[in-house]
Image 1 (cartoon, rainbow, N blue to C red):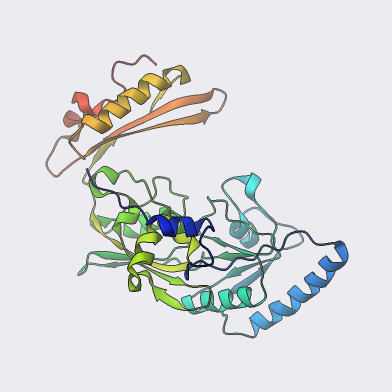
Image 2: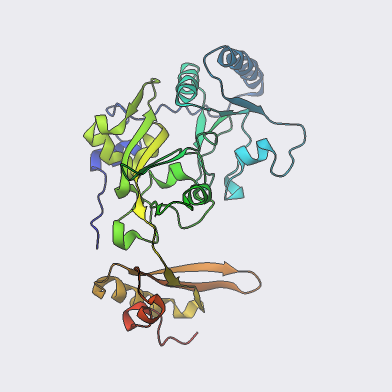
Length: 333
């Protein structure tokens, strides 16, 4: 098994605001609160004036305003959509930087005028704002360096796109198990992957992060060892990420597995089987994931996903019949 590194406690505390005044990397975020209607009108006029200032700056990205009628999957809908509809808010504008320099210009503008904002990568987290959404969708680089066995990723794309771009190559990366999840949030929040038993968390495979700090400076996290470690789990609290360098790993020749569904009354016994597999199994190619999911017209069920990563020349189907591979073996559905 692979050991998993956790951020130092001081940076974890800073991520939740406990040490925000002493941590130099905490990103600035102003909460505007509720305003009386007269002040709200004044603030809206001021916001429009501030926006003109941004368009006259070095910002070359897109600025989206909400249309009178929002169409499904139009630019506004895609930039503000969230995985959980209950968390979706209605911002005044959406900023879409195209470069790291654009991101820096946007952060300086937001900080100067104390504007509340949220950063969006894939939209599966709860990062939302009534004022401005900084949508990183244009930062969607996927560059494979064969000589270094590294991949440079832009944070604003879903893992689906990363896997599609890397499909012709002999490598992959430690990424999300679900295709719509965004790269940026996943690679700063830990990152459980199908190959975690073999290679650790996704964040254990990050080589470096490029990020924009609250004062607009662009740095690489490796310039500060503590920051570099803190980014692996709480990175969304210290800056806006614009590039991530990760290890390239060999693409498995085959994977054997599939979902097995059980009624929820089997949860306890299933959990014991998965725990036993996790503690007694010594082969890192074997894993099992236990979840509770909702099935239409059925309701909640236990979903067990056992899987085995194959090696070249091996009959993974025969290998998967070993008892250690069957976490739910012998349990009546």
